[in-house]
Image (cartoon, rainbow, N blue to C red; front, side, top):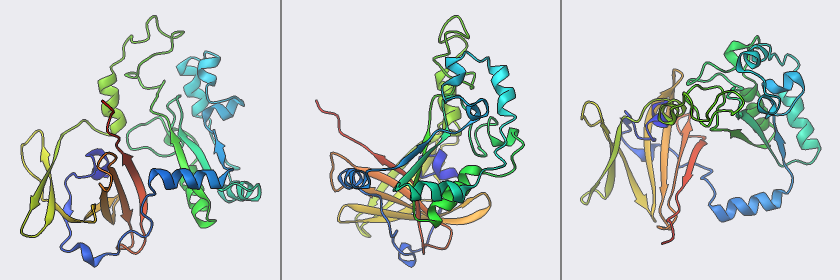
Length: 284
C-alpha cells in the first residue's frame, strides 16, 4: 500500500467530499485511556511462535545454540503447522480469561509468519499454503478478543542488518549496512516529502506529496480540522481491492500530537486502524 511506505500521504487520489463517508467509529485511544484499558484487562496471552517451534526451542534459539544461518534456513522450510486451528487458539485464550492476545509476526530470526511484501524469508518458502496470522486475526475479531502483533525490527537473517552475531562473524558490523537495511524494512527507500498548505478561504488543509526524484507534486488530499482533530480522506487500493483511507491528526495536546490512519473496505461503514504514532516533545 503506497500510503504505508510513503508516510501515509503518497500518490493518493482525492475524494470529492469527505462528508460522504462516516467518521471512524473507533478512533485510537489516547495514552491514558490505553493504560487504563490495559490495567483493567489484567490478563492477556503473549505467544512466541515461529521456526524455532519446529525444534521445540524458544525465539532466541538460533543465537543461544549458535545455529548457522544455512542450517536454520533448512529448518524454516519445514515449518508446516498443518494442525493449526485459529478458532481453537482464540477459544483457549478466552476460556482462560484472557482479554487480549499478542503474537510474534516476526522475531529476531527474521522469519515472517505471514506472506510478506518486503521479504522472501516468510511463509512462502514453507509447505503451508495459508496465512496463519490472518486466520488468527480473523478468529479474534469474530470472537471479540483484542488482538495485536509483536514485530521485531531486528533481523539476524538480513545481510545488511547490524549488529551481527559475534559467533558468526569477526566483527559485529562486518558486511552490514544499516541504511540499506532501514530502506528494506520500510518497504522502499525514502522518496520525497509531505507538503501541507492551508487555504484561509475554505479553512481546509491540502497535503501534497513532493517526489524527491522528479520534483513533481501529486494531487492533494484535502481535509479539515475541527476542535484540533483533522480527518483527511482518500482512496487507494490494497492487493487489488479498492479501499477508503482516513488519516487522523490529533493536536489537542501540542506537546504530544498523535497521527493515525485507518482503512475501510466497505465505503466507510466500518474502519480498521492500522497505524498510530505518538510524538513527544523532548524536555530541554
